[in-house]
Length: 378
Image 1 (tube, rainbow, N blue to C red):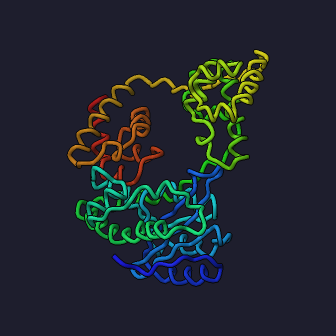
Image 2: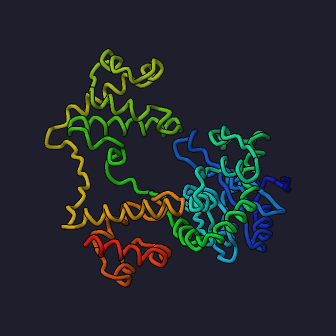
Image 3: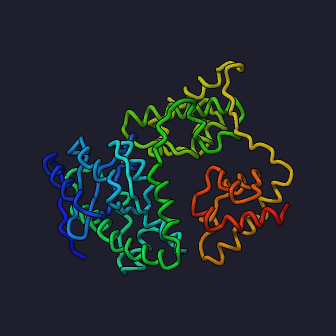
Protein backbone atom coordinates (compact mmCIF):
# COMPACT_ATOMS: atom_id res chain seq x y z
CA UNK A 1 0.00 0.00 0.00
CA UNK A 2 1.50 3.34 -1.06
CA UNK A 3 0.57 6.80 0.13
CA UNK A 4 1.86 10.35 -0.15
CA UNK A 5 3.38 10.97 3.29
CA UNK A 6 5.10 14.15 4.44
CA UNK A 7 6.24 15.75 7.69
CA UNK A 8 4.38 18.86 8.83
CA UNK A 9 6.83 21.09 10.71
CA UNK A 10 5.55 24.67 10.29
CA UNK A 11 2.32 26.43 11.36
CA UNK A 12 1.51 27.30 7.75
CA UNK A 13 1.82 23.66 6.68
CA UNK A 14 -0.36 22.59 9.60
CA UNK A 15 -3.10 25.08 8.70
CA UNK A 16 -3.15 23.83 5.13
CA UNK A 17 -3.19 20.13 6.09
CA UNK A 18 -5.91 20.71 8.70
CA UNK A 19 -8.10 22.34 6.06
CA UNK A 20 -7.59 19.37 3.75
CA UNK A 21 -8.54 16.85 6.42
CA UNK A 22 -11.65 18.80 7.41
CA UNK A 23 -13.08 18.03 3.96
CA UNK A 24 -12.87 14.28 4.64
CA UNK A 25 -15.46 11.99 6.20
CA UNK A 26 -12.95 9.65 7.86
CA UNK A 27 -9.28 9.89 8.90
CA UNK A 28 -6.87 7.53 10.61
CA UNK A 29 -4.84 8.75 13.58
CA UNK A 30 -1.86 7.45 15.54
CA UNK A 31 0.62 8.96 17.99
CA UNK A 32 4.23 8.38 18.96
CA UNK A 33 5.52 9.54 22.37
CA UNK A 34 8.74 9.49 24.38
CA UNK A 35 7.64 7.94 27.68
CA UNK A 36 10.58 5.51 27.58
CA UNK A 37 13.17 8.29 27.49
CA UNK A 38 12.05 11.35 29.48
CA UNK A 39 10.72 12.22 32.93
CA UNK A 40 7.67 14.01 31.60
CA UNK A 41 6.32 12.20 28.57
CA UNK A 42 5.02 14.13 25.61
CA UNK A 43 3.57 13.46 22.17
CA UNK A 44 6.36 13.61 19.60
CA UNK A 45 4.47 12.79 16.42
CA UNK A 46 0.84 12.84 15.31
CA UNK A 47 0.14 10.75 12.21
CA UNK A 48 -3.05 11.51 10.28
CA UNK A 49 -4.02 9.75 7.08
CA UNK A 50 -6.77 9.39 4.50
CA UNK A 51 -6.74 6.98 1.58
CA UNK A 52 -4.83 9.53 -0.51
CA UNK A 53 -2.97 11.73 1.97
CA UNK A 54 -0.78 10.94 4.94
CA UNK A 55 1.06 13.44 7.12
CA UNK A 56 3.17 13.34 10.27
CA UNK A 57 2.67 16.45 12.38
CA UNK A 58 5.75 17.32 14.44
CA UNK A 59 4.67 18.86 17.79
CA UNK A 60 8.32 19.43 18.71
CA UNK A 61 8.54 21.90 15.83
CA UNK A 62 5.00 23.30 16.10
CA UNK A 63 3.95 24.24 19.62
CA UNK A 64 0.37 25.19 18.73
CA UNK A 65 -1.71 22.33 17.35
CA UNK A 66 -5.01 24.17 17.80
CA UNK A 67 -5.66 24.09 14.01
CA UNK A 68 -6.35 20.36 14.48
CA UNK A 69 -9.07 20.86 17.11
CA UNK A 70 -11.92 21.41 14.60
CA UNK A 71 -10.97 18.18 12.84
CA UNK A 72 -11.05 16.11 16.02
CA UNK A 73 -14.18 17.74 17.43
CA UNK A 74 -16.15 17.47 14.16
CA UNK A 75 -18.72 14.71 14.72
CA UNK A 76 -19.16 14.41 10.96
CA UNK A 77 -15.62 13.07 10.53
CA UNK A 78 -14.83 9.62 11.90
CA UNK A 79 -11.43 9.36 13.60
CA UNK A 80 -9.99 5.82 13.45
CA UNK A 81 -7.49 4.78 16.14
CA UNK A 82 -6.11 1.44 17.30
CA UNK A 83 -5.98 1.18 21.09
CA UNK A 84 -7.14 4.76 21.56
CA UNK A 85 -7.10 5.09 25.36
CA UNK A 86 -3.53 6.41 25.61
CA UNK A 87 -3.93 8.58 22.50
CA UNK A 88 -7.14 10.22 23.73
CA UNK A 89 -5.57 11.06 27.08
CA UNK A 90 -2.36 12.36 25.49
CA UNK A 91 -4.08 14.58 22.91
CA UNK A 92 -6.14 16.17 25.67
CA UNK A 93 -3.17 16.54 28.05
CA UNK A 94 -0.73 18.07 25.57
CA UNK A 95 -2.99 19.97 23.17
CA UNK A 96 -6.44 20.26 24.80
CA UNK A 97 -7.84 18.25 21.88
CA UNK A 98 -11.23 16.60 22.38
CA UNK A 99 -12.45 13.85 20.07
CA UNK A 100 -15.92 13.25 18.67
CA UNK A 101 -16.86 10.26 16.48
CA UNK A 102 -14.02 7.96 17.45
CA UNK A 103 -13.71 4.40 16.15
CA UNK A 104 -11.21 2.09 17.82
CA UNK A 105 -10.16 -0.88 15.69
CA UNK A 106 -8.61 -2.62 18.71
CA UNK A 107 -11.90 -2.44 20.60
CA UNK A 108 -13.76 -3.57 17.49
CA UNK A 109 -11.42 -6.54 17.15
CA UNK A 110 -12.19 -7.65 20.69
CA UNK A 111 -15.96 -7.36 20.16
CA UNK A 112 -15.52 -9.58 17.11
CA UNK A 113 -13.87 -12.15 19.33
CA UNK A 114 -10.42 -12.06 17.74
CA UNK A 115 -7.96 -13.93 19.92
CA UNK A 116 -5.27 -11.29 19.37
CA UNK A 117 -6.28 -7.66 19.01
CA UNK A 118 -2.88 -5.95 18.93
CA UNK A 119 -2.14 -3.98 15.76
CA UNK A 120 0.71 -6.26 14.73
CA UNK A 121 -1.49 -9.37 14.95
CA UNK A 122 -4.52 -7.76 13.29
CA UNK A 123 -2.56 -6.38 10.32
CA UNK A 124 -0.94 -9.77 9.85
CA UNK A 125 -4.36 -11.45 9.92
CA UNK A 126 -6.15 -9.18 7.45
CA UNK A 127 -3.36 -7.86 5.22
CA UNK A 128 -0.46 -10.30 5.76
CA UNK A 129 1.65 -7.29 6.76
CA UNK A 130 4.46 -7.46 9.30
CA UNK A 131 5.28 -4.39 11.38
CA UNK A 132 8.38 -4.27 13.57
CA UNK A 133 7.39 -3.60 17.17
CA UNK A 134 10.94 -2.53 18.05
CA UNK A 135 10.13 0.98 16.84
CA UNK A 136 7.52 1.38 19.58
CA UNK A 137 10.37 1.57 22.10
CA UNK A 138 12.52 4.01 20.12
CA UNK A 139 13.15 7.59 21.21
CA UNK A 140 10.60 9.55 19.18
CA UNK A 141 11.93 12.85 20.54
CA UNK A 142 15.05 12.47 18.37
CA UNK A 143 15.47 15.04 15.65
CA UNK A 144 15.93 14.53 12.84
CA UNK A 145 14.03 11.25 12.91
CA UNK A 146 15.79 8.41 11.07
CA UNK A 147 14.13 7.34 7.82
CA UNK A 148 13.30 3.89 9.17
CA UNK A 149 11.33 5.46 12.04
CA UNK A 150 9.32 7.79 9.80
CA UNK A 151 8.66 4.84 7.48
CA UNK A 152 7.33 2.82 10.42
CA UNK A 153 5.16 5.73 11.58
CA UNK A 154 3.55 6.16 8.16
CA UNK A 155 3.01 2.41 7.71
CA UNK A 156 1.53 2.14 11.20
CA UNK A 157 -1.38 4.43 10.30
CA UNK A 158 -2.04 3.80 6.59
CA UNK A 159 -3.77 0.43 7.16
CA UNK A 160 -6.22 1.70 9.77
CA UNK A 161 -8.86 2.91 7.30
CA UNK A 162 -9.16 -0.32 5.28
CA UNK A 163 -8.98 -2.25 8.56
CA UNK A 164 -11.86 -0.20 9.99
CA UNK A 165 -13.95 -0.87 6.87
CA UNK A 166 -13.47 -4.62 7.26
CA UNK A 167 -14.25 -4.60 10.98
CA UNK A 168 -17.33 -2.40 10.56
CA UNK A 169 -18.77 -4.78 7.94
CA UNK A 170 -18.16 -7.77 10.18
CA UNK A 171 -19.68 -6.02 13.19
CA UNK A 172 -22.74 -5.10 11.14
CA UNK A 173 -23.13 -8.72 10.02
CA UNK A 174 -23.37 -9.96 13.62
CA UNK A 175 -25.29 -6.97 14.99
CA UNK A 176 -22.59 -5.55 17.26
CA UNK A 177 -21.67 -2.30 15.52
CA UNK A 178 -23.90 -0.27 17.85
CA UNK A 179 -22.17 -1.91 20.82
CA UNK A 180 -18.76 -0.76 19.61
CA UNK A 181 -19.95 2.72 18.69
CA UNK A 182 -21.27 3.29 22.20
CA UNK A 183 -18.08 1.95 23.75
CA UNK A 184 -16.04 4.22 21.48
CA UNK A 185 -18.12 7.24 22.47
CA UNK A 186 -17.28 6.55 26.11
CA UNK A 187 -13.63 5.91 25.26
CA UNK A 188 -13.42 9.37 23.65
CA UNK A 189 -14.26 10.90 27.06
CA UNK A 190 -11.35 9.43 29.06
CA UNK A 191 -8.95 11.98 30.54
CA UNK A 192 -5.46 11.82 32.04
CA UNK A 193 -5.02 11.77 35.80
CA UNK A 194 -3.15 15.00 36.47
CA UNK A 195 -3.60 15.07 40.24
CA UNK A 196 -0.42 14.94 42.30
CA UNK A 197 -1.98 15.48 45.70
CA UNK A 198 -1.10 13.08 48.49
CA UNK A 199 1.95 10.88 49.06
CA UNK A 200 3.55 9.01 46.17
CA UNK A 201 3.09 5.62 47.86
CA UNK A 202 -0.66 5.82 47.20
CA UNK A 203 0.06 4.95 43.56
CA UNK A 204 2.77 2.39 44.34
CA UNK A 205 1.79 -1.26 44.00
CA UNK A 206 2.30 -3.20 47.21
CA UNK A 207 2.58 -0.17 49.50
CA UNK A 208 -0.51 -1.24 51.42
CA UNK A 209 1.37 -4.29 52.74
CA UNK A 210 4.04 -2.22 54.49
CA UNK A 211 4.06 -1.17 58.14
CA UNK A 212 4.13 2.55 58.87
CA UNK A 213 7.90 2.81 59.40
CA UNK A 214 8.71 1.03 56.14
CA UNK A 215 6.01 3.09 54.43
CA UNK A 216 7.81 6.25 55.55
CA UNK A 217 11.06 4.90 54.12
CA UNK A 218 9.33 4.03 50.85
CA UNK A 219 7.82 7.52 50.54
CA UNK A 220 11.22 9.12 51.15
CA UNK A 221 12.81 6.87 48.51
CA UNK A 222 10.04 7.64 46.02
CA UNK A 223 10.51 11.37 46.55
CA UNK A 224 14.26 10.95 46.08
CA UNK A 225 13.82 8.97 42.87
CA UNK A 226 11.37 11.52 41.49
CA UNK A 227 13.78 14.38 42.18
CA UNK A 228 16.67 12.58 40.49
CA UNK A 229 14.53 11.58 37.50
CA UNK A 230 13.35 15.14 37.01
CA UNK A 231 16.90 16.51 37.25
CA UNK A 232 18.21 13.96 34.75
CA UNK A 233 15.08 14.13 32.56
CA UNK A 234 14.69 10.36 32.62
CA UNK A 235 11.69 8.14 33.33
CA UNK A 236 11.46 6.83 36.89
CA UNK A 237 12.17 3.20 35.98
CA UNK A 238 15.51 4.19 34.42
CA UNK A 239 16.68 5.60 37.77
CA UNK A 240 15.68 2.78 40.14
CA UNK A 241 13.05 0.08 39.57
CA UNK A 242 9.98 -0.38 41.75
CA UNK A 243 11.03 -3.84 42.96
CA UNK A 244 14.33 -2.45 44.18
CA UNK A 245 12.65 0.37 46.08
CA UNK A 246 10.24 -2.04 47.74
CA UNK A 247 13.06 -4.31 48.91
CA UNK A 248 15.09 -1.38 50.23
CA UNK A 249 12.07 0.06 52.04
CA UNK A 250 11.54 -3.31 53.71
CA UNK A 251 15.23 -3.87 54.59
CA UNK A 252 15.82 -0.24 55.70
CA UNK A 253 19.62 -0.34 55.25
CA UNK A 254 21.55 2.36 57.13
CA UNK A 255 24.97 1.70 55.62
CA UNK A 256 26.36 1.13 52.13
CA UNK A 257 27.38 -2.36 53.15
CA UNK A 258 23.81 -3.26 54.14
CA UNK A 259 22.43 -1.55 51.05
CA UNK A 260 24.73 -3.62 48.86
CA UNK A 261 23.64 -6.81 50.67
CA UNK A 262 20.05 -6.24 49.53
CA UNK A 263 21.22 -7.14 45.98
CA UNK A 264 18.79 -4.65 44.53
CA UNK A 265 21.07 -2.12 42.86
CA UNK A 266 23.74 -2.42 40.19
CA UNK A 267 27.30 -1.29 40.95
CA UNK A 268 26.62 1.81 38.86
CA UNK A 269 23.47 2.63 40.83
CA UNK A 270 25.30 2.08 44.10
CA UNK A 271 28.05 4.44 42.98
CA UNK A 272 25.60 7.12 41.78
CA UNK A 273 22.89 6.95 44.43
CA UNK A 274 24.08 4.74 47.30
CA UNK A 275 25.27 7.41 49.72
CA UNK A 276 22.23 9.60 49.14
CA UNK A 277 19.84 6.69 49.60
CA UNK A 278 21.41 5.77 52.92
CA UNK A 279 20.81 9.33 54.10
CA UNK A 280 17.22 9.18 52.83
CA UNK A 281 16.56 5.94 54.72
CA UNK A 282 18.20 7.28 57.87
CA UNK A 283 16.09 10.43 57.71
CA UNK A 284 12.87 8.42 57.38
CA UNK A 285 13.86 6.26 60.36
CA UNK A 286 14.06 9.40 62.54
CA UNK A 287 10.47 10.43 61.88
CA UNK A 288 8.52 10.43 65.18
CA UNK A 289 6.02 7.62 65.57
CA UNK A 290 3.06 9.97 65.71
CA UNK A 291 4.06 11.48 62.34
CA UNK A 292 4.42 8.22 60.43
CA UNK A 293 2.21 7.79 57.35
CA UNK A 294 -0.73 5.40 57.36
CA UNK A 295 -1.96 3.59 54.29
CA UNK A 296 -5.73 3.92 54.32
CA UNK A 297 -7.14 1.22 52.09
CA UNK A 298 -10.51 1.53 50.50
CA UNK A 299 -12.37 -1.31 52.09
CA UNK A 300 -15.03 -2.97 50.01
CA UNK A 301 -18.37 -2.46 51.75
CA UNK A 302 -20.10 -5.55 53.03
CA UNK A 303 -22.51 -7.01 50.49
CA UNK A 304 -26.19 -7.20 51.42
CA UNK A 305 -27.82 -10.54 51.99
CA UNK A 306 -28.35 -12.48 48.77
CA UNK A 307 -25.92 -10.35 46.72
CA UNK A 308 -23.08 -12.93 46.63
CA UNK A 309 -25.51 -15.53 45.30
CA UNK A 310 -26.72 -13.13 42.60
CA UNK A 311 -23.14 -12.23 41.66
CA UNK A 312 -22.34 -15.91 41.17
CA UNK A 313 -25.45 -16.44 39.06
CA UNK A 314 -24.72 -13.39 36.87
CA UNK A 315 -21.14 -14.52 36.32
CA UNK A 316 -22.34 -17.97 35.33
CA UNK A 317 -24.77 -16.38 32.85
CA UNK A 318 -22.01 -14.11 31.54
CA UNK A 319 -19.60 -16.99 30.97
CA UNK A 320 -22.21 -19.02 29.12
CA UNK A 321 -23.36 -16.08 26.99
CA UNK A 322 -19.82 -15.01 26.14
CA UNK A 323 -18.99 -18.54 25.06
CA UNK A 324 -21.98 -18.55 22.72
CA UNK A 325 -20.99 -15.14 21.29
CA UNK A 326 -17.31 -16.15 21.15
CA UNK A 327 -16.03 -13.09 22.98
CA UNK A 328 -14.28 -12.54 26.30
CA UNK A 329 -16.75 -12.44 29.22
CA UNK A 330 -15.41 -9.08 30.38
CA UNK A 331 -16.56 -7.51 27.12
CA UNK A 332 -20.17 -8.29 28.00
CA UNK A 333 -20.11 -6.96 31.54
CA UNK A 334 -17.22 -6.28 33.89
CA UNK A 335 -17.08 -7.51 37.48
CA UNK A 336 -17.74 -4.09 38.99
CA UNK A 337 -20.98 -3.72 37.03
CA UNK A 338 -22.07 -7.25 37.91
CA UNK A 339 -21.60 -6.40 41.59
CA UNK A 340 -23.57 -3.16 41.21
CA UNK A 341 -26.44 -4.98 39.50
CA UNK A 342 -26.43 -7.75 42.09
CA UNK A 343 -26.54 -5.26 44.96
CA UNK A 344 -29.27 -3.15 43.33
CA UNK A 345 -31.25 -6.28 42.41
CA UNK A 346 -33.59 -4.52 39.94
CA UNK A 347 -37.01 -6.15 39.62
CA UNK A 348 -37.66 -5.16 36.01
CA UNK A 349 -36.00 -3.56 32.96
CA UNK A 350 -37.04 -0.06 34.01
CA UNK A 351 -35.22 -0.47 37.30
CA UNK A 352 -32.24 -1.97 35.48
CA UNK A 353 -32.13 1.01 33.13
CA UNK A 354 -31.54 3.36 36.07
CA UNK A 355 -28.31 1.64 37.12
CA UNK A 356 -25.29 3.87 36.53
CA UNK A 357 -22.55 2.35 34.41
CA UNK A 358 -24.74 0.15 32.23
CA UNK A 359 -24.46 0.86 28.53
CA UNK A 360 -27.53 1.22 26.37
CA UNK A 361 -26.54 -1.83 24.31
CA UNK A 362 -26.21 -3.93 27.45
CA UNK A 363 -29.69 -2.94 28.61
CA UNK A 364 -31.23 -3.38 25.16
CA UNK A 365 -29.67 -6.72 24.26
CA UNK A 366 -29.33 -8.43 27.63
CA UNK A 367 -31.75 -6.61 29.93
CA UNK A 368 -34.44 -9.31 29.87
CA UNK A 369 -31.89 -12.08 30.45
CA UNK A 370 -30.30 -10.26 33.40
CA UNK A 371 -33.70 -9.72 35.06
CA UNK A 372 -34.58 -13.36 34.45
CA UNK A 373 -31.33 -14.52 36.13
CA UNK A 374 -31.95 -12.23 39.11
CA UNK A 375 -35.54 -13.40 39.59
CA UNK A 376 -34.55 -17.02 39.30
CA UNK A 377 -31.81 -16.52 41.88
CA UNK A 378 -34.11 -14.67 44.28
